[in-house]
Length: 107
Image (cartoon, rainbow, N blue to C red):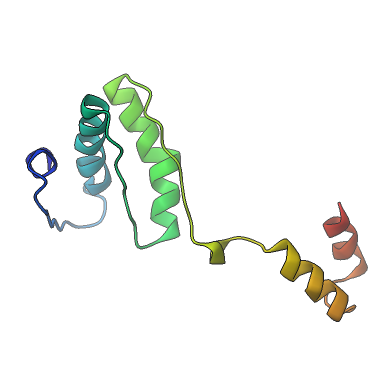
């Protein structure tokens, strides 16, 4: 992994569940980013894996490397509530929400 990063060479790896693939690519990617000052992008197929990386694996990498490692989680817009669409839905369908739900949404 480290050699692929240094040489900007594509790398494909495959391994079974639970063998540590995430840490196997996060540690070299983090070291490379910290040593070169360059940013890295980790793209995943599932939101669950994104959450695992941010909540579990990246904190482990920070601890192992003993350095602060900035990380952010970006999701596609389909994963967020659109306030305008919610407002329109509430206006168009009075019975869309129960009175309790409507009160909660009002804040």
